Image (cartoon, rainbow, N blue to C red; front, side, top):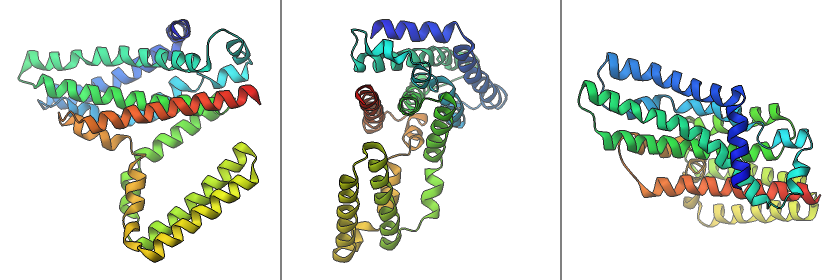
Amino acid sequence: MKTICKKEIRSYLTSMTGYVFIAFVLLLAGIYFTVYHMLQGYPIFGVTLDSMSFVFLIITPILTMRALAEEQRAKTDQLLFTSPLSVKDIVMGKYLGMISIFGITVLILCLFPLIMLAYGEVSLPMAYTALLGFFLLGCASISVGLFVSSITESPVIAAVITFGVLFVSYLIDGINSMLGQTAATSTLIFAILILGVAVIVYSVLKNSLLAILIGVLGEAVLMVIYFVNSSLLEGAIQNFLDIFNLTSHFTDFTNGILSLSHIVYYMTVIGVCLFLTVQSIQKRRWS
């Protein structure tokens, strides 16, 4: 794992990818920092990080698109599979390598509150709590990108899908506001999602019986809940979609609130995505 991590860091720092990643984040941070804090004198550093949270829509695909997709395209993944390292070590090594590049950026951002302190009063605990949230949000976004990179051989397709997934996550608050909170609305959307899951299961596992079973049982349970106690479905789709809303858990950090539940949420997202990445590689390895 340590060897893979060093290799990833070296590959990013010996090419333009790592430098473009770091430079773009710092450029955007510098613009917001200058406007909000240097010109307007706003004392809360979290507002800069909150304003630039959309940056992960752009930088995550750039950083992760080649992580595993390029290995598949060039067939160099076979060399990794025949090495003494386990798939888990390979995935963790690549992930830690990308996190290290992102960590360099966050360490540089840690200097910004100190610059503010030199020109006025600023709450350092609030500022560094916001930076912790920013780091966790970035780590979660990168884990999503790594998983997407494991399911395709094309870096371009990996980048596009990663952008799409993160973009939908970024828009979930707006989507929730447009959806009704009635039981009928939740039932309809859940029914469509169950069918979608059944289709995905069939396309991945090629098991029609399992796909049909998931679809039929899922729809049956949904109908039973709707007719027996429809109140359980009121607002349920909003609660369900909030699970995939990465940025909503970042808001408390920007306000200086260190919440254990938000930390656990981001760690869970990271864990699930890394687990799915390992399973995706294992399936391809033995197929």
